[in-house]
Length: 165
Image (cartoon, rainbow, N blue to C red):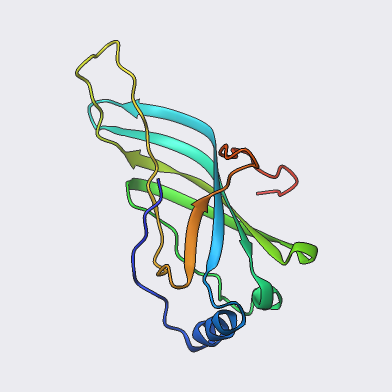
């Protein structure tokens, strides 16, 4: 599930890049989001929490911002927030450039404990939907997150295994 918070980042470098991006294209960046869960464990009915290890992949067509990616310029900083994270969350990040498509792919390896209100009315014959709630601190004027879909409209659940994170 994806939600957004309207708190745009205020750095001068960031804002000048966005003015360039918006004047060139007149629209925000679109981030195509994929989740791939590698582990769900420690499902605790009493605490209503679970431990998850997953990969989050965000594909962005960046256009004029392609050359700004690097350790010295931190324009990509939407601060992804997992609003139902309880504790011990760790996130490891890497980026891959595809110059032909003007596309950037951001990879996040995430581990942590998340909370979820369990419906135990049919326990022990119940089924739970465990959710990781993703938000961002960038306004949709700048970045819109959408599920990554294939040509048939089916959600993609894959991770680039060449990326070593």
